[in-house]
Length: 274
Ligand SMILES: Nc1ncnc2c1ncn2[C@@H]1O[C@H](COP(=O)(O)OP(=O)(O)OP(=O)(O)O)[C@@H](O)[C@H]1O
Ligand SMILES: [Mg+2]
Image (spheres, rainbow, N blue to C red):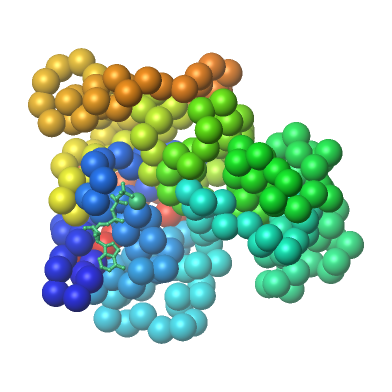
């Protein structure tokens, strides 16, 4: 992945197993957002290939049709919520179904209300984003991301714009999705949360994956070295409450560079080489 002549991602070779949670951590400017955006082609890679849920594309063979196919498999949740300000919470959650013409108005409304209920947001369904707390807005945006049942949900620091007291509600909403085995890739600085919820973690620095493996090993604060130092620096800044977060599922055995999904039809492989 390259911006003008500068390579921002290099030698990335990452595979995410269906139904698993991957946490991406690393210092500011290391390429985490760019990596996430490359996974659903919001950013086009200059070399390599991306494969999501069986749809594979080479960087030099990108076209609108395949881009659309890849994007249809995944949705992204942003740091700044990105809700439509002129739509209510309910209308926001209905919007992907209506926009993509996959449901009638009544069906979309019923599905959106169900997801809002799951996230305990039914009471605010008719409110506009400006009248909601940051935590509520982020939960609405998560509801909007999953209403169309994507194969993969990509989160870019979903709690970093929130007041501390709002963080655990959003983390719990994400934990609920993990329980449903929705494939997720999450850029986060919430180390304890990532340890609990993620199967694998990757540490990115200077556009490269410095380490990749089971989350509780990669994100361990004991020991020495670059990653432990980084993890400790995050933990020492004072972590918000993450109680009530569900137990993460058992980390799966990941090979270092390539893991093939055990269910091929919805394999979620991601590669972006430079
Ligand atoms: N549109 C762009 N044009 C040029 N350079 C960019 C662009 N977007 C990002 N970059 C550069 O690419 C590098 C990686 O940026 P990226 O936003 O992916 O980092 P990050 O790890 O997400 O950082 P942060 O933790 O601060 O969000 C940075 O050096 C950044 O300046
Ligand atoms: Mg970023």
